[in-house]
Image 1 (cartoon, rainbow, N blue to C red):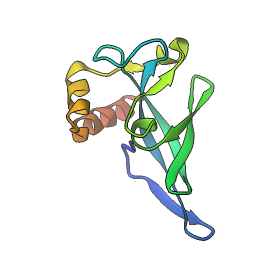
Image 2: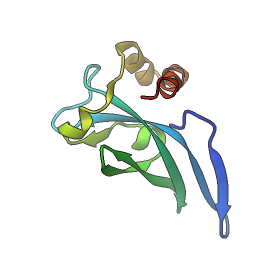
Image 3: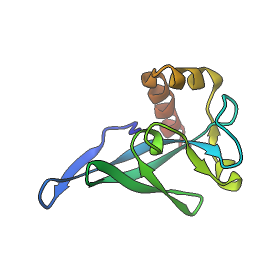
Image 4: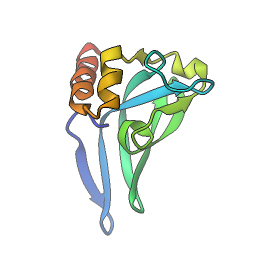
Length: 119
């Protein structure tokens, strides 16, 4: 999910691209997502049109991961190895509930504060 205004540009015939700070939700590869194991990352991400999809990549601790759609995995948390996942910021419990209830504006507001803090 983009959390700042994105720069939109076109290359070629209707090839849409955007770039801005992006909120990525992640879970460890050896667990199901629960309220206490979702971690967050905020990275600058450029998404490019790939057919009907917007895709890009983000650097987390020197490792590039593929990003697609909302929260990096079409609305679901990305699955990361535990070492990479541990670098994330824990998602507060009340925001896990907001995510499950499609109250994205609350998560957006919280993620914006992370940029201001330089996280």
